[in-house]
Amino acid sequence: MGSSKEPDTDRHGCPRHHGIGVSPGLAAGPVKRVFPRVREPRARFLPPERNVADEAERIRQCAADTAQNLELRASLASGQGAEVLATAAQIAADPTLIDGACELVHTRSLVPARAVWEAAGMLADQLKDMGGYMAERALDVYDVRDRIIARLLGRPAPGLPTPDREHVLWARDLAPSDTAQLDITKVKAIILAEGGPTSHTAIVARELGIPAVVAAPTTAKLRDDDVVLVNGAAGTVTVSPTADQLAHAARPIPERTFSGRGQLACGTHIPLLANISDAAGASAAAEAGAEGIGLLRTELWFLGTTSEPSVEEQTRHFVDVFDKAPAGRIVVRALDAGSDKPMAYLPTGTEANPALGMRGYRMSRLYPDVLARQLEAIAAARQETGADVWVMAPMISTLEECEEFVTAAHAAGLEQAGLMIEVPAAALRAGQMLAAAQFASIGTNDLSQYAMAADRLQGALADLSDPWHPAVLDLISTAGKAGAQQARPVGVCGEAAADPALAVVLVGLGASTLSMTPRAIPDVAAVLAHVSLAQARELAGVALAATDAVQARTAVRDRMEFLTDLGL
Image 1: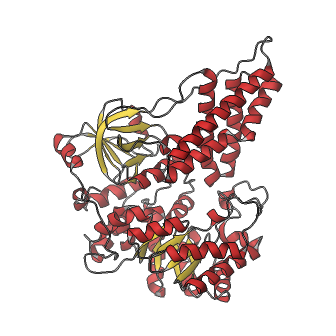
Image 2: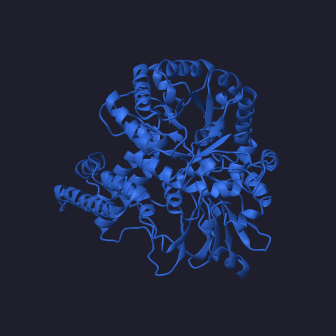
Image 3: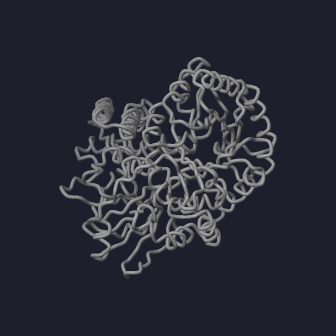
């Protein structure tokens, strides 16, 4: 059992570990393991002569120093790294954590290190119970906990090694703040024994272009200075690679650019679109040559505010994005609130399992006017900019929900109204839904977790929540066939579209467009250009015939020998 199969040997006879590739590329080098995390302090109590108020104040001071250090690092970082460090700094200053630890010192006379450990554990458990995005914050809490405890004990903070040469970084899991501080001039690749494809590490590795493999527990056997070859697309880690393999990995890969048209070898056009969240993302998509926006996430504008943005505020946001976006369609996802993205002004009550509760379009059952106002803002921005705007609803499960959303969008003046296929029921009934909607877009992240009943943020179950799994591909195939029957476009906007080999399979299953992070577009375009539609369909059949995700990925890649020449 576990999130990857046991090690085997490659065709050169070299030991090979398997995990999940989350950032493509080939890189080799000696392994350097991260410094160990803080061990759990013993539950010791303060001796009578120690002043509890002074000990509590030590916690506050060490927490403040930790927050200040993280804030400084955030100011020196950029992009996703800066956001991660800023989040960690906020947690270090969070009264819930600090007051909780100080209370344990006052009420139970716990030594400060133990008090911080227990208070952080309680806060992390609360976040885990919320699921999804909030559960992912638990890792930030553990990171901050360890940093505060290290200061209390007068020890260096755990985390990244600082070798003076290029290396492959190994960790059981990386704290978000560690990921944000990676030195890309030294770190050639990343291997995590745990983690998942939507973890901070995966996101940052893709942003930085560092090959990365996660959910590879058997790599825990690796030692410092073991030489390994990491294939971030195939999800493999080869130990003691041959000289030829090392030479191949060291070959400079020509920087790929995108011509502006995704096309198969047979000439079939597969538009390559971008996933974005804001105007900066729209500019990045335009610079990458994306053929449009396949997913505009809107909930980030609502998170962190104490009240719902007005129609006017939302309209300004949309106008800014539409003006900066590349030419082509702009697919807006209606507010995906709830579950891992709770909003204080849209309470849903206590939910035992928020991921299966009030989220996405279902929030309209409680707050129908929120969707109405958002559609009004989208329509106003479209009118002002003249953009080709499509709109889709997340978490659609029934034909009734689909019809309700399409009717509401049309009433707002938005003719291109569709649904996201994230729930297996929507995939299985896609034919009926596409008779009512103008298009569909498959969210492979959620579709995988719901199909396999495995939280996509649970690293220990990463092998189940993998879009390469044939069961997930079956659902995608069903949706693709429904799109063909109804003559409606069915795209993919989940992380799966950014995997060059899987992109070919998705096209073979009927995906008419692919949407991804802008950085992935050139690689996906290069791979699509090597296969015809007939070959893509044949490779899709190979994946469907497999028994698990690892076998599907390996079997498809074995038939795409040109991937190694492309450095993928």
